Amino acid sequence: MPGGRLTQQERQQIAVGLADGLAYAEIARRLDRPTSTVTREVMRNGGPTGYRADLAQHATQRRTQRRAQSAPKGAQAEPQPYGRDAEAVREYQETLTTVLMTSGLPNMMARVLGCLYVADTSLTASDLTQRLQVSPASVSKAVTFLADLELVRRESDGRRERYVIDNDLWYQSMIRSVRDNDRFSETARQGVAVLGRGTPAATRLENAARFLDFVGESLTRAVEQARDVLYTKPGTPAPTAEPGPDRT
Image (cartoon, rainbow, N blue to C red):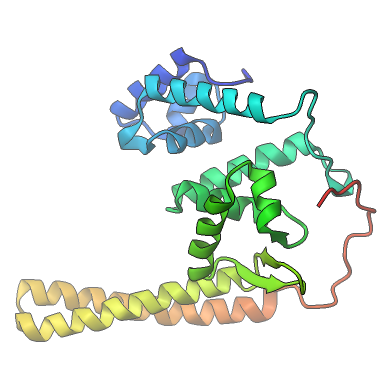
C-alpha cells in the first residue's frame, strides 16, 4: 500500500470519484489507500460537494510550507508516555478527527476534541495551541463551542482553566439528543392541531412524533443502564506501566 502524501493525480481521481457518486471506501480502494486518508482529504478541502483537486493540492502545499517555517530544525514528534509510538498516535488522532468531522463537527472543533481524546490528562488552552499549532483565538472559539454542546468540561487547577472530556460525554450527548427530539415531537403535535387531524400533512407529523417518543423512551432507558453498568468507577487502578517523557 502506498504511503506518503497524496499526489495531484490521486486528488484528481478523488474528484472524479466524488463526481461519480462513489463512496469514500470505493475511491480509497481504487487508489490503494486507507479509507480514512480519502475521508480526511475530502473533509479538509471543501467536503464531498465542494472538493476541487487543484485547490486541495494548493492548500496542502501551503500547509506544508507553514509547518516547515514554524517547526524548529530537526524537530521530532513529541515523546509519548506508556511507551507509545508518537507517529502512530499522531496518525490515530488525525483519523479520529476526521470521523468527528464527518459526524458534523466543524474542522477546528473536531481537531480540539480529537486532541483532548488522546490526552491522558486535562489540557490548557496553551497546551492545545501548542499541540495543534493554531492561534489561541481558534482554540478559545472551539472550546466555547464544545463546552456549549457539553462535549468538553472546564475545570481549574487554581491558576489556569483546563479542559477535559468528562466520563459523562456520551451520556450527556445522548440525553441532549433525546431532549432535541422531544422538542420536535412537541412541535409536531402542535402542527397536527393546526393542519387538521387525519390530513396527510398532519398524519406525517403525528407519525414522526410517535416514532420519536418511542425512540426517546427506549434510548433514555438504554443510556441510563449503560451509565450504571459500563462506566469506569472512581478508584479504578491506573495502568501499571511507567509513563515516558511528558512535556506538558
